[in-house]
Image (cartoon, rainbow, N blue to C red; front, side, top):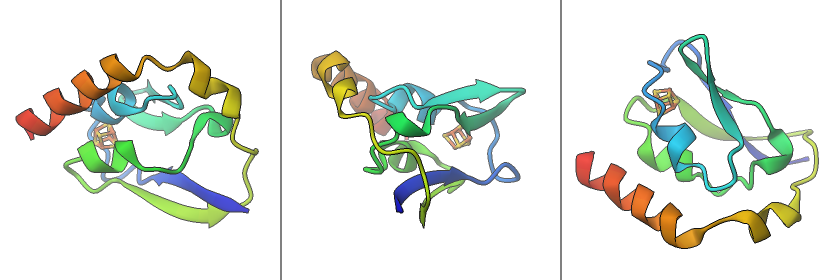
Length: 91
Ligand code: SF4
Protein backbone atom coordinates (compact mmCIF):
# COMPACT_ATOMS: atom_id res chain seq x y z
CA UNK A 1 0.00 0.00 0.00
CA UNK A 2 1.13 3.50 -0.76
CA UNK A 3 -0.25 6.91 -1.61
CA UNK A 4 -0.85 7.31 -5.32
CA UNK A 5 -2.99 9.56 -7.50
CA UNK A 6 -6.48 8.81 -8.69
CA UNK A 7 -8.19 10.90 -11.36
CA UNK A 8 -11.91 11.64 -11.28
CA UNK A 9 -12.92 11.11 -14.89
CA UNK A 10 -16.14 13.10 -14.42
CA UNK A 11 -14.24 16.20 -13.30
CA UNK A 12 -11.38 15.93 -15.81
CA UNK A 13 -11.73 18.22 -18.83
CA UNK A 14 -8.62 16.96 -20.58
CA UNK A 15 -6.59 20.17 -20.40
CA UNK A 16 -3.38 18.16 -20.08
CA UNK A 17 -1.78 20.36 -17.43
CA UNK A 18 -1.26 17.43 -15.08
CA UNK A 19 0.43 15.43 -17.82
CA UNK A 20 2.85 18.25 -18.45
CA UNK A 21 3.41 18.90 -14.76
CA UNK A 22 4.25 15.32 -13.86
CA UNK A 23 8.05 15.16 -13.60
CA UNK A 24 8.09 11.39 -13.91
CA UNK A 25 5.76 11.07 -16.92
CA UNK A 26 3.28 8.88 -15.09
CA UNK A 27 0.21 10.42 -16.73
CA UNK A 28 -1.13 10.43 -20.26
CA UNK A 29 -4.13 11.90 -22.04
CA UNK A 30 -6.37 9.25 -23.54
CA UNK A 31 -9.69 9.91 -25.22
CA UNK A 32 -9.65 13.45 -23.86
CA UNK A 33 -9.10 12.45 -20.24
CA UNK A 34 -6.06 12.22 -18.01
CA UNK A 35 -5.07 8.73 -16.99
CA UNK A 36 -2.44 7.29 -14.66
CA UNK A 37 -0.80 5.06 -17.23
CA UNK A 38 2.36 4.17 -15.35
CA UNK A 39 1.66 3.81 -11.65
CA UNK A 40 5.24 2.73 -10.97
CA UNK A 41 6.24 6.27 -12.02
CA UNK A 42 3.81 8.02 -9.66
CA UNK A 43 5.79 9.36 -6.71
CA UNK A 44 2.66 10.50 -4.87
CA UNK A 45 4.00 14.02 -4.30
CA UNK A 46 1.12 15.60 -6.19
CA UNK A 47 2.59 18.02 -8.72
CA UNK A 48 -0.39 17.11 -10.86
CA UNK A 49 -2.81 18.00 -8.05
CA UNK A 50 -1.27 21.46 -7.78
CA UNK A 51 -1.97 22.33 -11.42
CA UNK A 52 -5.43 20.80 -11.83
CA UNK A 53 -7.95 23.62 -11.71
CA UNK A 54 -10.88 21.21 -11.62
CA UNK A 55 -9.87 19.35 -8.47
CA UNK A 56 -9.99 16.16 -10.46
CA UNK A 57 -6.95 14.57 -8.86
CA UNK A 58 -6.50 13.33 -5.33
CA UNK A 59 -4.24 10.91 -3.51
CA UNK A 60 -5.50 7.61 -2.21
CA UNK A 61 -3.88 4.87 -0.19
CA UNK A 62 -4.09 1.65 -2.13
CA UNK A 63 -2.18 -1.32 -3.46
CA UNK A 64 0.04 -0.20 -6.32
CA UNK A 65 3.24 -1.13 -8.02
CA UNK A 66 6.27 0.12 -6.04
CA UNK A 67 7.70 3.47 -7.14
CA UNK A 68 10.49 3.08 -9.68
CA UNK A 69 13.25 5.18 -8.08
CA UNK A 70 15.45 4.91 -11.18
CA UNK A 71 13.13 7.38 -12.93
CA UNK A 72 14.62 10.19 -10.80
CA UNK A 73 17.86 9.95 -12.77
CA UNK A 74 15.96 10.71 -15.98
CA UNK A 75 14.34 13.94 -14.81
CA UNK A 76 15.57 17.32 -16.05
CA UNK A 77 14.62 19.27 -12.92
CA UNK A 78 15.42 22.65 -14.48
CA UNK A 79 12.89 22.06 -17.26
CA UNK A 80 10.41 20.67 -14.78
CA UNK A 81 10.56 23.81 -12.63
CA UNK A 82 10.12 25.99 -15.74
CA UNK A 83 6.97 24.06 -16.62
CA UNK A 84 5.53 24.35 -13.13
CA UNK A 85 6.24 28.07 -13.03
CA UNK A 86 4.45 28.50 -16.36
CA UNK A 87 1.37 26.72 -15.05
CA UNK A 88 1.26 28.63 -11.81
CA UNK A 89 1.51 31.94 -13.68
CA UNK A 90 -1.34 30.92 -15.96
CA UNK A 91 -3.37 29.62 -13.03
S1 SF4 B 1 -5.15 18.91 -14.99
FE1 SF4 B 1 -7.11 18.07 -14.18
S2 SF4 B 1 -8.63 18.60 -15.73
FE2 SF4 B 1 -6.61 18.86 -16.71
S3 SF4 B 1 -6.23 16.88 -17.71
FE3 SF4 B 1 -5.33 16.77 -15.65
S4 SF4 B 1 -6.92 15.84 -14.35
FE4 SF4 B 1 -7.91 16.54 -16.24
